[in-house]
Image (cartoon, rainbow, N blue to C red; front, top):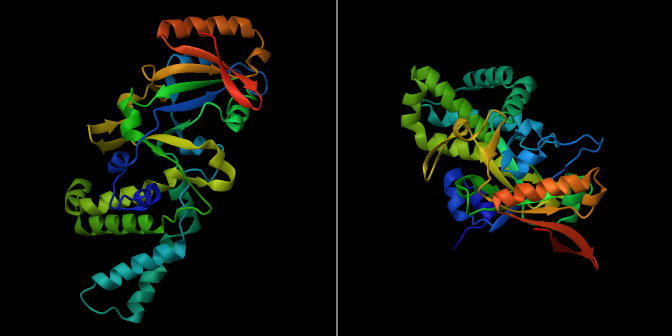
Length: 317
């Protein structure tokens, strides 16, 4: 029986790389953007964006403070570590020893420590956000400056970053509990230090456990609050510093430029201008420039128009 996406995402035995084999992508994904900010200042990157520059943001840069932020329960982390030590001990641990373990864990696992772990986590991965439709009214209003902006269409077949690094977001009413992931990392690192091993040596011995910990550690990247964000119908492209994929090692510094952009120029197949595009200052000059860029790139240009409560695409190029 085929597993659902939820089951695959939450299964620690299925790696991030293997997940891309379980999940088929839509033929096209979309990105909404603005020509101007709400205060009227021009988005100086819109020409680069249309030419293919796509910015990948850190989790800490997202609007929602809880986006990409793992949930961890201090008491649960302590209990997992305590149970591990009891089960792995060759002799029965008396109450005095157990109390000592609890006291040491309480000293280490302070609220400040957990907060630093969660904050650091949001700075360890870069994410690009896409959606599945060019006709999403709420997306036009929120991310394209009330329909005055534009939406780029990307063919998911024309960039390996889509195939090997892009997954759908799962919308949930509660956050994913990362307590087990943190406890596993603490146990692994304590064991490594206690044995006097290098990180490479320890990884060779416990690679399967490290892989499970890595998978569960990054699950929160793909879970968002349903009530606030389900309208986005989001897919996320993600880059770790280094990650093994089906086509070899993917290193973030090899695909990102100095501004944390990737090049998706080959994947862009169309530009959709918003229904209110003509409200932009100098919109005629902007349209001429957009048509020139699109002609060079050999891509289509449309403008959204409302017709009896639905969008139609008026052909410009």
